[in-house]
Length: 254
Image (cartoon, rainbow, N blue to C red; front, side):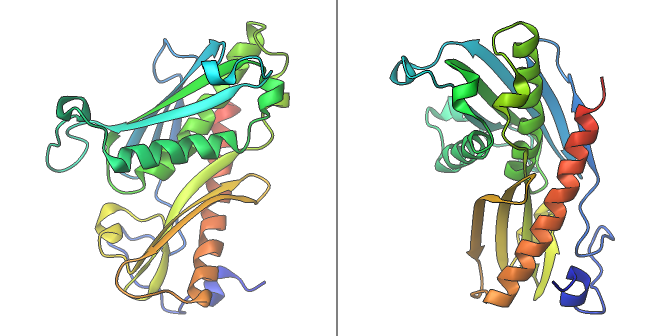
């Protein structure tokens, strides 16, 4: 397989933050960010910062009872001044927006994709992802950080004998990253300034074993072709491998 650097133009454009087109923004994952939840993580991807918490509860929703299966669900929200201009809280508006619903479901799907619900038993994990500061890639950062919070919650449950083994519940890891085509050039991990002018914008969630859970791609100004799609997926695979390395490094710390 050709290397990404061979598929991209030999002269790489200068990005506003000086990164190469196949380079992630600086990533920092801080565990135990708050003291109360069973899992609590602050993930920083460049200037995007998301707090991800995982709450472990014995028992499942009514529709899931007597199945012997667990459940993982997620909620996503953004603080009013996470963005350049203040936005009203959705609780004040009295209605949860379509984007919020979409991202919440996305996070939940990605996490459920790496969980053995039978091994988990009739227990519930609720993930809350709160964007403290948004500079592009909030949904992908949420997935990446939520996985680490999920692992911590499962380890807590094993320690307190609510589940037999956290390792048996976890089938794989999962992370997510954005890619896009900017002025004809495929790029990895888009901040807002790039995302807002992308010809193609894509979010890719991938497991540690290299399988895809979610691929969301949209052409904003012109359709993209198969060659561009292949390059974007290769960029996303590279970025996800690096994010998964950051996850492992964070989880290896006591």
